[in-house]
View: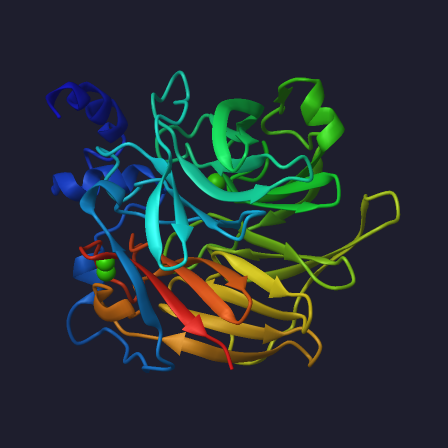
Length: 380
Ligand SMILES: [Ca+2]
Ligand SMILES: [Ca+2]
Ligand SMILES: [Ca+2]
């Protein structure tokens, strides 16, 4: 453990003047808004949070795997889970494999980014080439566009070499393949005139196979499909485009982590952007969107409302009516209660949920705590 201290110190510099608690110093590096969540969420001012639904515990992770995040369905029916360990990154990040209801290691020793000396896998997805691609969130470690898109070479269901295919993202977050194109959200794609920027970018498999793509930060790089601007609220969080998926008609949807807006992107036949709009929701309004997935057989969009510790369903075929599938108050995750959900994956009728458990200011979840958990909801 001792040999990790120099790395931790460098990562903690930004936060050191803003937090007394060494445990939250590392967390604080992740966001421009530094928080003392315990102080904000505790006490009489905390709003009452309804308890809705009954998420169940899938399994508990150990302290070496303290922050589960991205989920991908593998061709063999297993799930791959990314564990960036952002709540306590003294433990190295890894990829794990979910086989039925049990968990095993999938890939450890992920390649670290050369300057941050960290790996930070977020969302992931299998490509049409059978290989696994994951986005990185190095924003935790550096605000200087150090995040990457990585490729895990697959052979007989096992991971081989892991290489960089795109670099110079700020905070690469969600990924989805549609045909031979991968779409990636960057939650912090700032521009010279907008430090609240975010974007969806896209890359063809053919281009990725030619060599590493080097993005041009703070520009409308040719890979940028759409850009967004976060309206920062009382959470202080300016992260934008986060979860990403497409519906049965091929329209793309992303949601903003900082302000909860849901965006629909309609593409032209050549793949360029035809139209971008903010969805008008019926019923409940959603203040924060993390991971999301669309069931293309129903065009119901399942999303993680990280701030309110809830899973929401947006019915895209019914005027974007919102219903809350599950919600809990401030929990530690025991028994599968939601503990700040970050990512959802639907396999059959089972919704898998990663409990990220790494709060921001004004979030229902007030602290990162054991147990570290995955939840499931079996849909009717
Ligand atoms: Ca920003
Ligand atoms: Ca927990
Ligand atoms: Ca918690």
